[in-house]
Length: 209
Image (cartoon, rainbow, N blue to C red; front, side):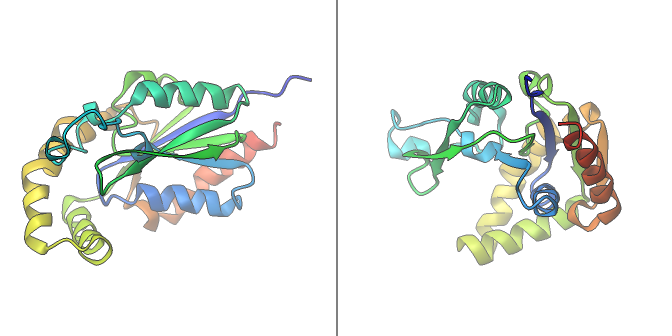
């Protein structure tokens, strides 16, 4: 008997929206046995051919920063029940690492990232499209806390990056992609009702296998 292809769920939203929290809550519910989390952040383009000084100017919030062709290729492999070697990005060197992570296919693949709904090729692969919608003031506070506490950034540098890069990219690319969503989740990981509804839907799909 030929096994059905895995389903792909896209989870998008702005920085600090809670999309990663939503995705992890779903994965934790299933104890990662049937659900695979794929992060778009792992698919930033290889920049090893560029001088380091030029790499420092990379706009990681722009669609052109991502190697979506490779991501589509890997998703197709996973849908065909093939193992992939997921790339790893080195944020200190601002380019792709030589290291990779071996990833086995699972019944449900959750693709998470700020711009996964912006790319038409990725959208066309998704069975369910989710947008995590959280107010801008909450998102900037979350980003401030994360970048200062976890990444050693200064308050001034985080604010400057948000005003000059993150906010304009959100308004130009992230927010408009919300119109492609099948499901919009307000307040991200705090919306337990929406997460329960998603996990119930996923359970019904898994039970068909």
